[in-house]
Image 1 (cartoon, rainbow, N blue to C red):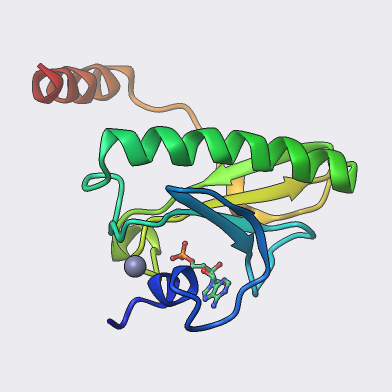
Image 2 (cartoon, rainbow, N blue to C red):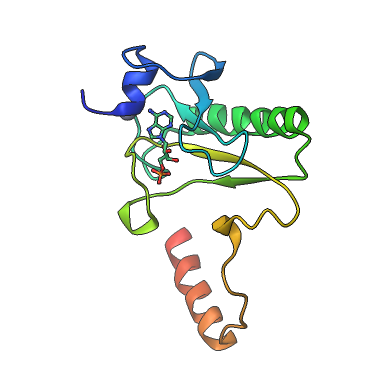
Length: 137
Ligand code: AMP
Ligand code: ZN
């Protein structure tokens, strides 16, 4: 098995764990973008949001909220960014679903949520919404 996060889950390689439950593991990111940057993963190998089971997703989501609260309190953070990438086009590197929990502080300058805010074309926005709604039904 080549998946690095499965190796962490199986104890084959070390990680700094903060939460270990039946369905979920949370551990510190080794390339932290801020102090307290951690990752929450399902123990069942799942590549992305499209594949994860509803049960694992619920367990991961619950753990993310608890980890975010704990990291915020432990580090006296002013905010927390939650980030999850799907596919190479979205910059996902490790193909085992993981949710980044990134403590934030005012003016910390992290680029993780800093896209340029410029008004879109409302006609185009509505047309795209219509297409998405069609796929939802
Ligand atoms: P991405 O797939 O782009 O969401 O990013 C993968 C994340 O996993 C990066 O933030 C890495 O620093 C992190 N990472 C990769 N290998 C390890 C590891 N062995 N232990 C902890 N974090 C890791
Ligand atoms: Zn895996």
